[in-house]
Image: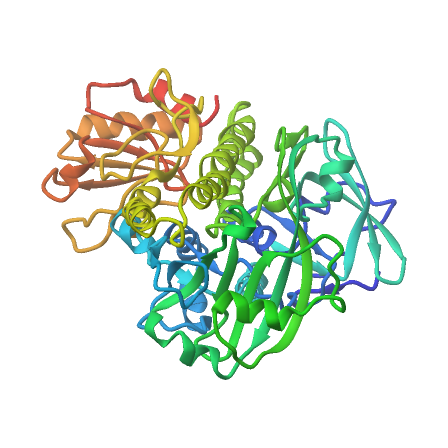
Length: 544
């Protein structure tokens, strides 16, 4: 087979007549989500093979907004520092956003989507980096893990599964075919996923019938035009003529390189439309422009009705896709990888119960549905309603009042996006809980919610003390209570780290002296020492 290996000794040598499994997991698609999943599995001692058709990451600057939560994943995967060093936008410059009305240089503008507002509730700062650079860092880290094999230059031609495993037919660039047998397969192969289609997973689609353009361009003079917006890295320009759809600028670096998304008329091609004039209308001034990429995409929402079919799973764009509004896409995909990775490892290593793998779709699918409905679609609909109701030329006072009200609501949007798994069967959430993207940020340890960072008395942050498996945070708890949890974990074969400390400020903000944290840094259970039987607790959170 003519596919190339990611590092010495990591080539795929499976043959059609081989007996047994080439690896525990095949990951089809070596983009950021696939590579993130490979690292998650590899660090947990699970053998996996990444099958990717591109030899190198594609040089299109998308997926650039990396949230604080994503940077927590990168910290866990050992690439946080590499990603920060690779960023073309230094921390001191700032990576905030701005919304303007009419043109980018309009007098009507306000700060938008300042993720720094929720920084205290996460362990890491957010970052901005083009997706191809993120992929390069992920590939380099994956190549360091002996459990991860990278097979570039190959695609999946066919997929079949039985009760014991999955059989894949790999097709190399020269047409040569190779058969690969694995225990599980995960499709991270994009919105047109072959894995999703061949495994019979259906999806729900909401097509807005809007053609969009993605431009990547260089300009020597644009930076000077918007010098008053120093510290801003992405810009949303509202145009009444577009009825709520965005014109969206973003910096690729702090120099001359930019990207731009916006609606274009149906039938637009590279050759029949003046893109330079379009950009100048959006900015509100003339500037030089040299195009590096012109591409098109259709604005739609798609979500798989289930993220699993037997031994086959899907993640990232294969499971869900949406317009690039708010920087949710790549971050949702990384959360898929983190959620699925530890559950696959637990199932393969014997400490995950029969309900654990089922919880992947049950947790992640509703979160995307909520994200698409309550945030991304809501952006479009609220902008549409605003533009139809308010016009500075018709009624300046009314417009100014409504514009100020919009600006004041931005903070609530940031704080309100807090994906959680309150409705999951493997956490001790409220009786009426549901998995959703709508929540609140707080330091209180709540089952189903992300653990907020708190300092320990030895100077470390709690995130620096979390184990690779489950972690029990025990604050001023008796030895026999901790011993009961440790014994219950030993009996289940479940990896459990224990972090003991005083229940003083700032840890008392957790409002619980015992906090059981999952491998993905979500709270599984929280309470007082006499609040729950450890055996029952660990059986539930491990899917037993």
